Length: 203
Image 1 (tube, rainbow, N blue to C red):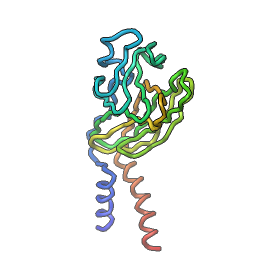
Image 2: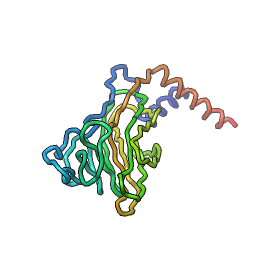
Image 3: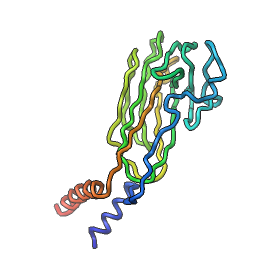
Image 4: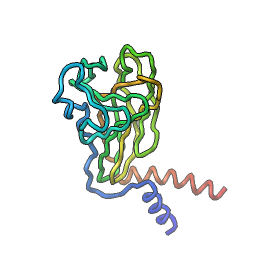
């Protein structure tokens, strides 16, 4: 009886469910090709947070979207648009899951050309810092693996963290794959953790 109570408590703490019907979480507009910037052209074809609309992405601080070959001197790694993170800023999207999933999230980052100020980018999921990346002068693909999420809403966020003038990085081609974590596999993972917890309590 006690083990069942602990198991139920653990499922609740991790926000996980054992529901059998699943809807895999997805990200939308992953290369920023759909936005209010598409109505502009030339060197000024970019918009900052507070003006730009690229649903379902949200923008704060000095973030935004640019077309290729604007005053940002950038070319997207995929398509004709990219997001920029200048100084202290963020780009985020909320997604939904109806079950337990193991996520892998990949994305492309590059430093702004011709500007010496260095920008680091943090990747957060549900307000938990996953990693910090120092982009290079060339587009590169980075991946964050083994992100376990349960049913409900979740938020992926990219944060620029430097406040130096013109410290900027570009973001593009964000992709997410979701693998269903079946109930037996989930319970096995929890059982291993609970076994270790019980041993520590007994010691």
